[in-house]
Length: 271
Image (cartoon, rainbow, N blue to C red; front, side, top):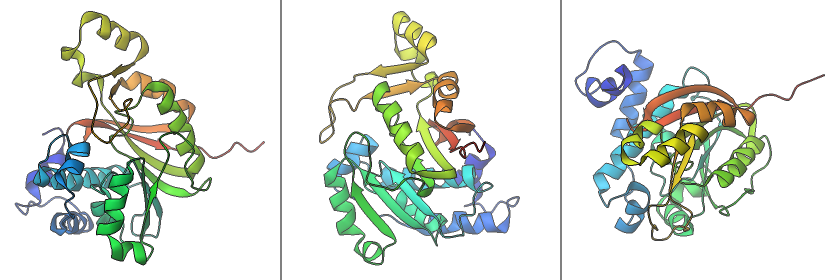
């Protein structure tokens, strides 16, 4: 276990352990009781790395609870918010986030048109009543969303796959569409995940630059540049702080694997 929160979510809640506020217990309970619609195996594999449907659902549940833990003391998730799930795939996280923020309106975008079509077909009630809006975005900025629009933006397992120049373009776009003081929860693959798997020269590049992009092969249905990317914490603090205030960094804070980076859009300076 990497944290007390992880232990509670994985074991303590089911065992009825005391020690958390009742409001937190109820929220965890609502997520544990929810279920997701399961997409076809090829769409599961595209975002999950395997065709394991149970694992796909459980990761979505776990990631949503990790996001809740990261933002709950900064934003009221019981109030009506505009939330964007950027790179939503097949709504793996969105389904459970809508339990956590029951009064919010969710927008979900991805460049995978097949995944977006599946979402529209499988969540028709939420789409009809305007709770979910699914959007196919281009694979490069901009998005169709208004400036200063979202209270909370999620980008889980997105910046873990993009080349550096494209990442910087998307950071600028997310800054545009987040409201002032808006929160962003983004994930990265920390350098600890790759150090022992790359050679001396590649480790030197990672040390010097703080970013490493590796081409491991193509993924069916996704662009060729969709590969693997790693970030050191120092890189995130140095580069991402040009776009946002980096308010928090939790190693393995996303499902005990990817790092969780909490960002805040700065308000314009008034002179």
